[in-house]
Image (cartoon, rainbow over all chains, first blue to last red; front, side, top):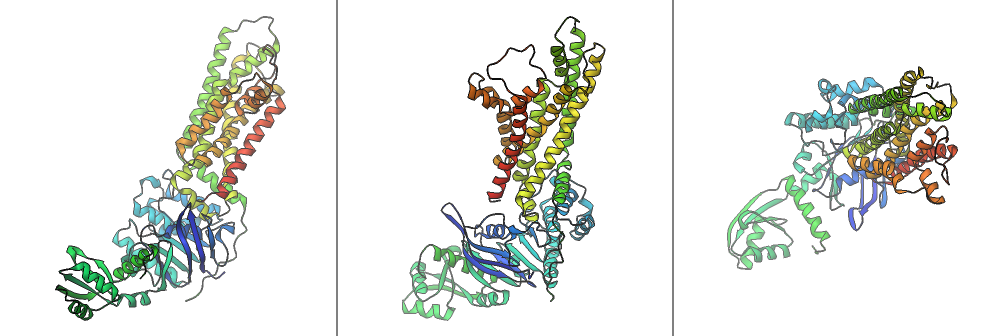
Length: 306
Length: 275
């Protein structure tokens, strides 16, 4: 099995609400692929569909060429951490993992290994109800590693981890990818993925926005952003938008402009005889590139022509 | 970069799922306590009843069949049946509803995508554990109470086929109730709601149905609690005859059908639902 996650025209509707909308992308081995989107973009639903926990309204999601739901046992093929809360607080961490291991015919020694690997060996005999969120994340990661699978899915795995834990998780993901595994990690924070992923799948409102390497994505972000203060910001915004710029309201009535440089903004303002108070150029961050892209998707879905 | 390919996978065995579900069942601290205390309650209730009978027994030319029934009833009466119904039904309901309420079901199904196998393993483990619980309570209570009544000459031996049926009906009542609870827990997915639903179906449904008409009598006899009542009646001697009496075979069939239907419905729901 080549451990590729393939999502083709995947669609999920709940009643009239379309949560995942004809999504197509491929996640390949050897990379940590970040799965980015604002809250409610459909990331968790997509991961659940990949894991066969829901049935798609349309399209397919396969792992290694087969729908996951058709497999009799899952842990040796795909390790997943969907939600660190998906455990029973009344059991000990060790009992939780042992039950998972038993169901997939994984030897009990492997439970000890993963407990050591995630640093929970000392807490394994305690009930999960007393764990902190960070400890639960570690327990969930231990469960995902249990079957030594070629494909790993993590939904917001950095939530609740302390800085040391975040660093540890990043190194772990990198190592798993370097071992040739497929690592797919969701997040709603670009800043988290910037240092974790080397490829990105970005979605907004259930639709694909970008599927590229972090370098390609960063190239988009290479464009500068300009902060403009003007006497008549609304008129200026209209002029800049007509010239192909993306304009977002900034703090204190300022405009955050991407897509045109400061010189061009000055020219346009002069032509239209618009008074400018300030014109500040700066490099846009990956975070801004992400915000701009996802804001675009919202505009697009609202039916406004760009 | 090398590509990790999955090694040859072990053949999936249902026994692995049974072992996993059994570990999950016994690793919840509340379960041994609930089962232990309610077993004590069943035995204590029997003992109290046997001591009462012992103190109020006046030998006379009574019908031996009636006396045999009196002796058996002290081993496992309606109160004991109520305890078993509540505990077994509640354990069955919370076993699966707790898994849904905590979200553990997603972890479970991501590890074992074969949903029907998961549900079936859970049902088998639950039924076996509850049969053990029912057999322990009814068996110990039978032994203790019949020993108390032995010196009156009315104590029964388990070698007596009617006594064996009486104890078997009591022991098997627990897994039947537990599987009904499992089904409702799967449907409701919320622990408290599932327990309330189970209590409604097992306790209150029988009291809503009259024995007056043929079809309602059939309906009544096809409910778990009335089925247990009929099976616990080793003789109809001394009872007011009814127009549409329940049958022993029909009552055993009721046990079987409720169990099978509960598991079938739960499996179908788990198979279809989004998790």
